[in-house]
Amino acid sequence: MSTVLDFIAKKNSQQKITMLTCYDYMSASLLAKTEIDCLLVGDSLAMVVYGLPNTIGATVEMMVQHTQAVARGAPNKFIVTDLPFLSYRKLLSESVTVAQKIMQAGACAVKLEGAAGNLELISHLTQSGIPVMGHLGLTPQLFHALGGYVIQGKTKTAQQKLVTESQALAAAGAFAIILECIPSTLAKMISKKLTIPTIGIGAGKYTDGQVLVLHDLLGMNPDFKPKFVKTFLSSSKLIEQSVAEFIFAVQRGEFPSHEHSY
Ligand code: KIV
Image 1 (tube, protein in one colour):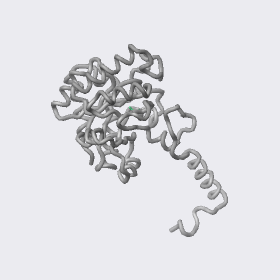
Image 2: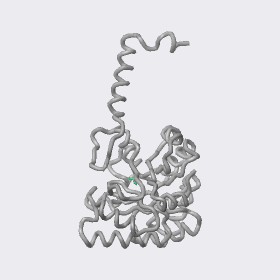
Image 3: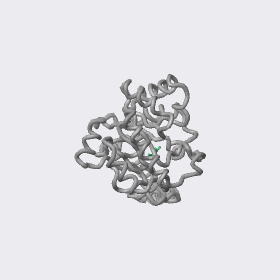
Image 4: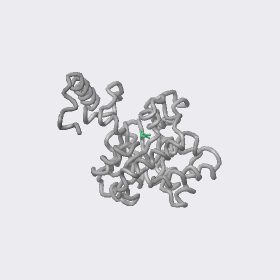
């Protein structure tokens, strides 16, 4: 299993870090057989698994259950789990309890969005043995405040803010930072300035690693095709085709055949 030290080592030796979301046991079992460095039990599961309109509906209970399932399927992988909306924005002790539940569910690290208001918690968690991954740029939990899923870091002021925030996260003890939907030149600059790795999504090729939502990579939702997603498989077509073949086989009395019957 990779460790936080391996991620830093990869950055130092200019080897890219790879990360994918994973929400369930079966996907985790499949990913466990691959060379992927890191699995993310992202709060995007609220949308992908539960069909909610954004990540605001993700709860601690959901994150705990899905972390347990992923940890069972991929005990050999470094698992990062999102702290869900507002669960880390109350009292320090309450936030620590949330992180404790998630770590005890099988996560190796937690991820949280934004810098302002989180630095004390990050120091506290890292000093308590909980590695923390930061997340800057388009932070989906701030969907309403950001005015939707829009590219961040477009103005000079916004760029300077992101540089300062990334340095503050690193200083507080974060072991890596996700950079989401920011210009690639800005992601490059931040990645160069930091000694901890950056992992990009919609942030160009110069980050120290890349993360994608597994379902996007597999092309499971043909209606969702943002610029930063590359589908490596057209699985929605294959699924529709397989289901059509099943229906046809059943209707024609070809399935189940002798070989599939007791
Ligand atoms: O929840 C998630 O899937 C994420 C990734 C988009 C980085 O945070």
